[in-house]
Length: 407
Image (tube, rainbow, N blue to C red; front, side, top):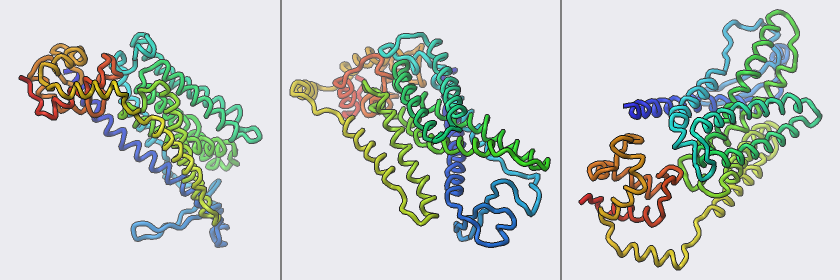
């Protein structure tokens, strides 16, 4: 029953997490587009009101006229009903952390620990994963606060954060199972994004609003910090998304240099995102959009695809596969593989994901799952903890495609 309830928590948290992430990313992308698409106001009326930038847009059969005030409108006091964009961020992080807890922390021994990578206890892995989230934010925030105000501060901060992300990706892949390491790096970036909103962007905006309503001149540092962290958040977005999605694709995180795969995937995402960010400003200025950054990101992805492509089988492997294919993929042969590779986690006493494979009835009921997870996607056994071979996966594949007989 506990596993069943955890599965329900998993699916509901995942559902809400995706919804809130869409809301957060969508609003973030829109405001980046809006901010970079503004042009100086042309009308005297707008200038007199204190408008610093305007944008006309058409959507859904209507026309929209957006105005941006850097400080506050000159023609009226700030309204009481101000819209604040922060619950999208907080909800995304809270549901994501809940999902991480249900899936990874509750099953740390299976999902976080790969003893062939680093042999430590489930408790230590849990503490290490939480430490990753906290430590990255502390170091990242320190970099931004100490180096961001220097000359060429944005460039210096960007390079330092890039170097730290590379180090953190390498370290995660040395400590955790590959699948968990990729997800954890995405989670640490997402934590920094939400922490930016919680600790800097929203408090700064609240301070500015309070100063304006008190008739004081706002301190420009709040706007500068908020802008800096908001820009970082938009560049983190695509790297976070690919790190989160990667856990569905074992061939990305199961290799020896999986940390480099992760770094290159995130780098490609950041380069592609930069082209879209810069495109809006280029459009306003009548300049060419810098698509070369997206092109560079695409080249990185193509290079990854070539690098990770499976090697052609050797003559010995071909002969072995042909000999195996000549043998019938009967229940007895498959039963031996299932008993050796799968039953330790899917039996009468322990039914991970509510799947039991210890008898013929359970195997028949879950034949499709076994075929998909072990033979097609090659995601199970998790982290290949039981060292199932490609020949055994092929045996399961032929057994299922021949009718999945259990006699």
